[in-house]
Length: 179
Image (cartoon, rainbow, N blue to C red; front, side):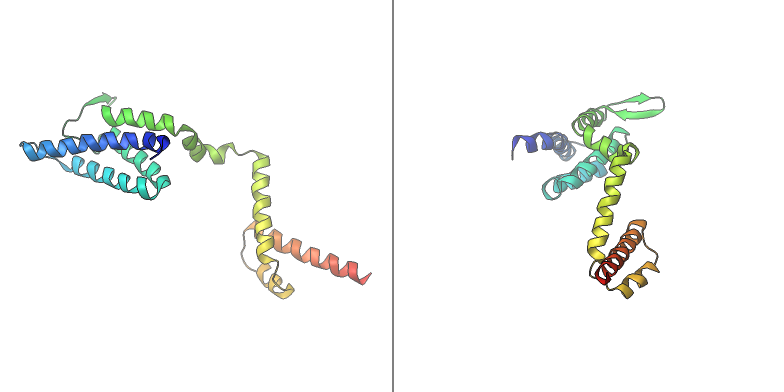
């Protein structure tokens, strides 16, 4: 693993080690897990699988797992250290890892949640133009009657516009060739 991958894996590794120590503690003593520990450790295993198979899915799933742990809905060890914020218990260990997670992925998180809000008119136009171009390429092989049939269907505005422009371009070429 490269240094970047190791840094990304480190929070999961630390929580997994804490979980394994807790499993050993349960096996060697009379401590028992409740549903929160079983679910928490299961989610950590799923995160580990996603880390090696689909890194993007891992990031989302690990973030959700940390949020669940922070909100005291799941746990990763036999000892749960929490403080109360208003009426909600906040687990300290997952909270610390969640803060690290949020700092590490702050740009991706802000892009994910604020992308649609922060789009400028120019970006919107570029997106529209790209979609229009894709539809023109897709429909360019259609005959005139096929285009007319398509225009009678319910289509997204970009597809409809692409069909209209294709017809207009063909009509202009035909008119230009007749002159």
